[in-house]
Image 1 (cartoon, helix red, strand yellow):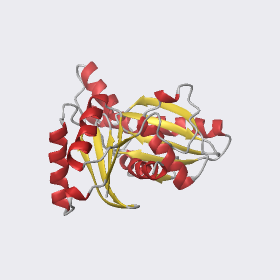
Image 2 (cartoon, helix red, strand yellow; image 1 turned 120 degrees about the vertical axis):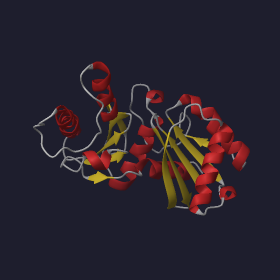
Image 3 (cartoon, one colour; image 1 turned 180 degrees about the horizontal axis):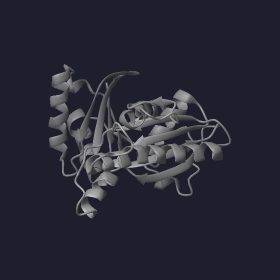
Image 4 (cartoon, one colour; image 1 turned 30 degrees about the horizontal axis):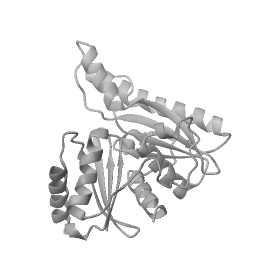
Length: 254
């Protein structure tokens, strides 16, 4: 079995593959202070709950945008599974030319998403990843990673309102029934939800125009399904896009 770890700033997504089949997956809070042993015990508990053999893992691949966790997770793979983990980063074969000015600056998760999206939908395509930051990544018709845009995630935007406006409360991110809020909470939710939706649609429209025509748009990330219930700008919602990309990259480097 292949253990795939996608470590984000807010959430860590763990997937278990048997060949190309995703057996199960979990979404957890990222613990930056977690140790090698703590993560091993956490994963072992998840395996036991799912009825999977912890020692059946024969390979590990890691994509992380949280540098303090890179070392502990690599050590966990060596200590508990007896394997040298594959780490998404410089030197790994992606099969995708990176046309960023400095390819090393591109987040590992963005490359993984781009590889998976092009494999599934061809090019040109655009990936929108709703994470701590929301990222937009453009892939050419030839399968080249062109670059993209980064903006604060909706969670950061919501928290900023609470932290910096003395009279505004912390609110849940949910779809309000109307755009014209009748109270403070409703007004904030309308602004966050519909404002963010308009941001996404606006950036996607401009990217499509710059790519020279109709580009397939795929969305992923924890809040993708909630935010895109109202949008016609996105063609596909794939919450497991990054895990699929990790499996593809693992196969390409065998």
